Amino acid sequence: MNAIRPCPCGFGEPFADCCAPLHAGERRAATAEQLMRSRYSAFAVGDRAYLLASWHPSTRPAGLDLDPEQRWVGLDVLDRTGGGPFDAEGTVRFRAHYRLRGRAGSLTETSRFRRAGTSWYYVDGDHD
Image (cartoon, rainbow, N blue to C red; front, side, top):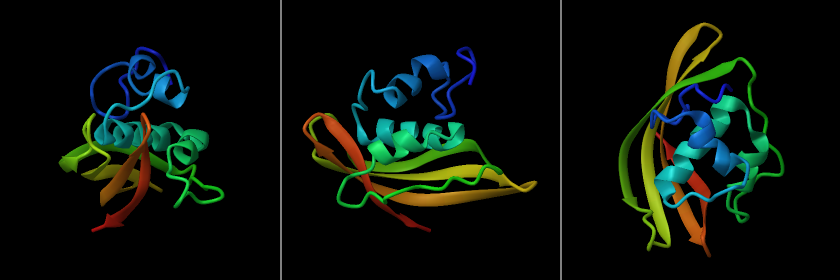
């Protein structure tokens, strides 16, 4: 992804300044929402390693297959609870838009996050 191209997470910053440093391990997500947005970006750019590393060890799968034909095209954050710099847990409800084999679709999920030390992790989520 080009450095001047907007980050897929929707903040409007270049990917190189927004989610790429989290993917590279140069910094950590400060909030549950920031982790969720960086994970969405990882789906958009196909970064399996970051998705697995940011998944809580208690629920992390052994592997992860991404559909190369699925293109993630937009993200709407609908709600959030907790997940701030001084919280241990948080939830983020979002709608992720995609295109798959020429058809538009969306996924709505309420994701649960847990902080361990200074790092936030995705635990699991409920799909609508």
